[in-house]
Length: 239
Figure 1 (cartoon, rainbow, N blue to C red):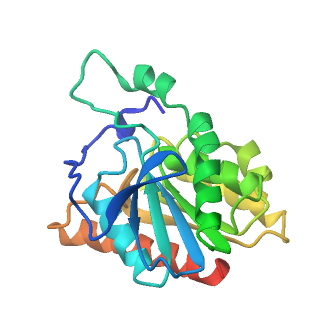
Figure 2: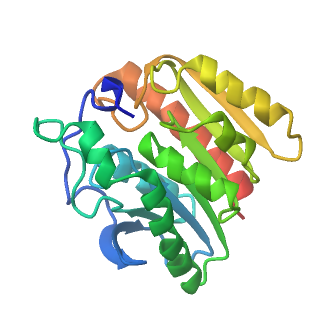
């Protein structure tokens, strides 16, 4: 997690972005969007820059348009990573925001979704959030997961996955390089009972799905392709 690729190209946060709203869910401020009558919930777990990332909220809106009730919790309690704070480098910040803590805090969020009448839940995690999502997959707390340019996800994590999993990696990723993603694929291939989809996107870097420049056609197109793959997986297995 200490790799500079996790900190490159930080997004400009906007608490007013997206077409949804913020409410407390499971004790956490959460960006919420979608029909409250939906029986299908999706938990999006952010990268280190947090739940006010406009590209992430835009993606949440898109997932909601497919019929899901989508929640993006603030697992950092108003304290996303700020690369401009030289006194608090990523390794220091992460001690206050370990993914294990995020995983524990995701449980009340899932319970809150169930209390709203939601009967099937999927999760997608971006960078930092992928570690939270893979823990949910290991403990079968969700129906399916998608890991996008994961960070800190290990071979042992993938061995423990018990639900359908999609892993979307980048060609230029020093955090989870293609070699590691291919290892993940080999492990999943040895577990035929677990549905899998693994893809390495060419010519993109770690973080491309939520830190792309919308005005750069090639970046936006690569991000869009990943979003479509993610959505297709969730539609197929969260029902």
